[in-house]
Length: 335
Ligand SMILES: Nc1ncnc2c1ncn2[C@@H]1O[C@H](COP(=O)(O)OP(=O)(O)OP(=O)(O)O)[C@@H](O)[C@H]1O
Image (cartoon, rainbow, N blue to C red; front, side):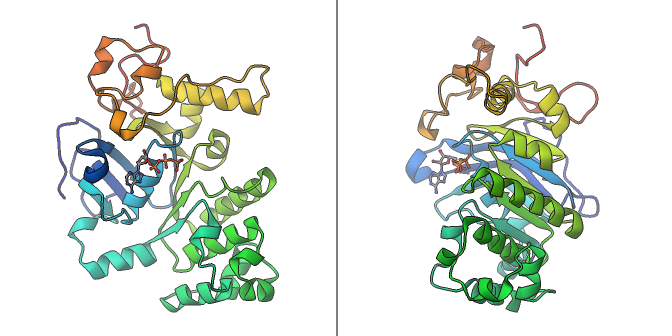
């Protein structure tokens, strides 16, 4: 395993395959040299997901959540320059043969994207797309898969082209395709963002019940903290390509430590609870070309000092060993 050390993060110890998490992302940097030169669009990201565990990755648009999902699924575009490691089931993905990588992408990891209309092939019926995946090796038939995602009118759905289905039905078909080969890990990238609120709730309930019955690990990428609180046992918060805080979801939501997490939570609560004045974090996420050195959140942070021009390391916060934080001036601490 090619771990770049130096960050002092809790995961800089080489993992042994027998006890390794299902997914271990260590010191992951992603750059797009032609577009952003040497800027790390994902900057030394560490994340682990155990078998059967549900982990949420949250942050505003442009924080690198999708890139992290793509990196975990070995689906980054060719233009990406990558350092650090992604290990799946104890194996460094970049050390795998092409065949092993294909196998991992197909059978080990299933991906559900935000926009089912563009993710599905518009020219093929849902049934044909499901049959194509099932042929590669599935313990279920296309009809069984459709039934498992709550689609009962299977004959019609099998014949329908994506545009002939509702948004919720398309998303269920996409989930059925992702689950066809019984993956150990499902990466769901904002799977409900394109849906209206009632349907969103159904899709989240479906994902939760499938995750429990099939016991796959789930990386749930979202900017919606209310959804995250319903699904994930652990949450990782990203800002501008850096992981700023992680820990048990309930704990993070009850006691955010990073000023960014606190700001996100307050905006989310003000919206959910219909506060007379909606709370928001001032400013917006910078484009990678304008990322600041040190803590990338410091220009939007009320706690920032000169010290924040240096990058805070993600390290254990407190003594319980479950919370990690990258901040010199966390919420609830005298600065
Ligand atoms: N192929 C690419 N080439 C260059 N830059 C990219 C590429 N893909 C993503 N980026 C940049 O990486 C940054 C992170 O993008 P990403 O899509 O991962 O964010 P996100 O948090 O998932 O946002 P959203 O919630 O809007 O999907 C953005 O600034 C984006 O422009």
